[in-house]
Amino acid sequence: MDCVNEWRDWYRGYEQSHIEFEKDGETVRAPLRNSYQPDYGKKDYAKLKDLERGAERHKDGSTTVMLTLTGSHVNANGEPRCIADHMRDVQGGYNAARKRIADVLSDYDWEYARVWEPHKDGYGHLHIAIFIFDSDPEITKSDFEPVMRSHVRNCKPAGYDPAHKPENDAVNINNEIDTLGTYISKYIGIFGENPLERSIEEQIFYTTTWATGTQKVTFSNGAHELMKIEQFRRETGLKPEDRGSAEDESEHEEIDESTGWEAKAICTVNSRTPHYNDPTSGGVDMTAIDGSDTLDPPPERE
Image 1 (tube, one colour):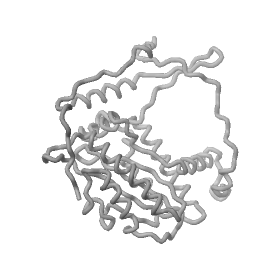
Image 2: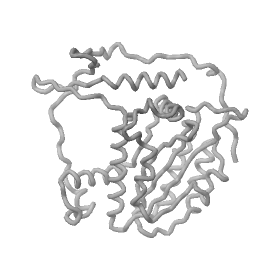
Image 3: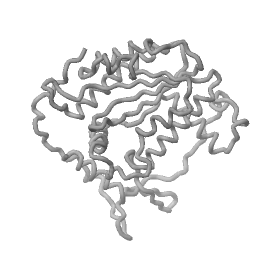
Image 4: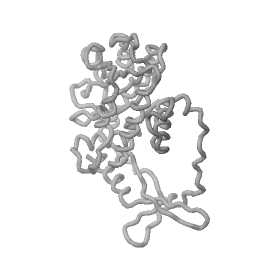
C-alpha cells in the first residue's frame, strides 16, 4: 500500500497545481493535467472515436482485429507476482509480437491503438485494436498465431493454450467498426469519477502504470494522422458530404499553432496568493522494498 499512497499523494498534488505562461509582460495560469484525471479519459475516448471515423471513411472500407496479451499472475512458487514485474513482462512480450503483426499484415494498410486494462485483481493485460483498411481482407484468426506465439516466447509468465490461442478470445475479427471505440473506451477513462474513489484494485493498477512509466493508451503514427484529419473536420465545421477524402486533407500544410506564450513557472494555488515551487529542490524519494534482494521468478509456461 505504500506505493499506492505515493501515487495518491502525487495525484492530489495536481488538484491545486497550475502552470504559468508569460507573453509580452502578461501572465496567465492554467491547471496542470495528468493522464489519470477524468477529463483525460474523455480526451482518449474522443481520439478513439476520431480514429474509428477516419478508418470507417477509408476508400477500401475497414476491418478490425482485437488481440489480447496477458500472463500468469503467480510466480514459480505459486504466490502472487510483483505486479510491476508482471506488467514489464507483458510489455516485453508485446514488443516482440508487434513485429509479427507487421509480417502478418504486410499486404495491407493498417494502424492500431494499444490499451492497457486492469483485471479484477489489479494486474494489467494489453489490448491491441488493429484497423485494417480493407472491408474484406483474406485473414483469419489462425493467421495471428505467429503473433501470439511470439508474445508467449518473450513473456515467460504467458501460456499459449488457452489464454493466447487465436481460436479462443485472444483474437477477434470484426467487419463492423462502429462500436470499437465504445468497446475499448471503458478501459481508458474514469469518465467523471475521481480515481481516488475507484476500487482499490483499480488504484493498484493505476499505481503500477505510474510507477513503471507505462502509458495506458498509445496510438500508431498513422493513427495519429487520421485523428488529426478528423479533428480538422470537426473544428472547421465541414458537413460529412463536403469533407472529401482523407488523402485530400492529408496534403494540407501544417498550421503554425505557435502563440508566443512561454511557460515560466509551476505553482500551487490554495489561497489568493500562489506558492511557487522551486524546480531545483525536486527529486525522487527512494524507499527500500522488502524482498527486493531476491528474484521473483515467473512460472515457465508452454
